[in-house]
Amino acid sequence: MTVDGSGTALVNDEPITLGPGEMRGLRTALARVVTLSSSPEGCDVADHFTYTLTYRGHRATRCLVPPDWRAAVERLEALARR
Image (cartoon, rainbow, N blue to C red; front, side):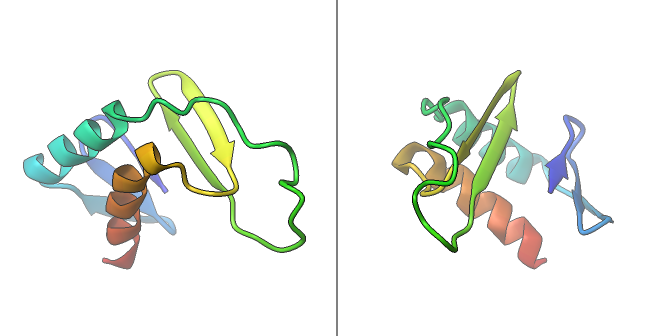
């Protein structure tokens, strides 16, 4: 999923428009992210999901969602379910 600064999300090649409140909430959640380092490659787990956040020039991939990522990931997951 990609969300641009204007509030348009691209989910599975389908555009979704975020309302001003949704966009503000997502920006607030992303601004609270302080975990900027990635998990070790492979994370020593055979089968798992990885989560990658890219925001304001920072990119990190984690095997487990850090607590400071939770609000942003939950908002993005909600958009994906629309």
